[in-house]
Length: 219
Image 1: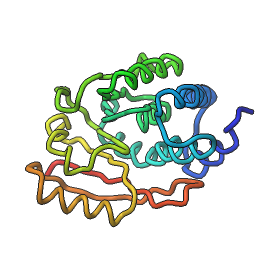
Image 2 (image 1 turned 30 degrees about the horizontal axis):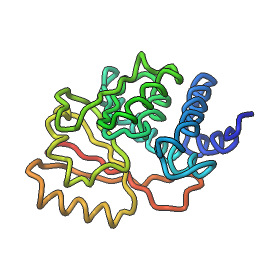
Image 3 (image 1 turned 90 degrees about the horizontal axis):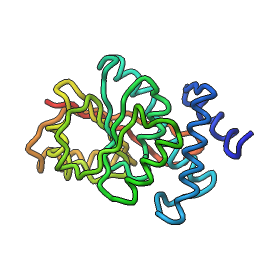
């Protein structure tokens, strides 16, 4: 058994997510790359089991919601992770949602290099690509857009609106519900784009913190 298998197995079971052996190999390979390069690149502010819970399992906690959304969006739906950084949540999600294509948008050179290497190590580079540019320079359209630990909603939604497909959905990982609702108030007063919003409380196994998933569709 690999170092974190017991924690991963119990967490995935709690979330109702079933990984086959290939997916577990990919996930462990990604975790190993994170741990190898984190001291050099400062990719995430956690290590050991805290890294697994706060970053890997937290990223995967939205999978049941996303599976339902993607079912309605269709089998050819394309997913983007904006400001992917260390590949969170994009790489864990790509491992879990193995029938879909992903694009990781990241503008910082060293992180782009890490992402491309991690995708090769995890055998994901045929289905997941890295787009090394700023959000303002992205011209493609995506059906589902996600981001985690990225800029506030009121800072980016006017930039995201043109690259979201007409029937697409944004899935934004957020912390406390009260902070999220404050952000959404600023969206309504500061953004020219208009959104229909809803939020879902995420139950992240072994994490003693409130986590929300904010869903946004074009009005």
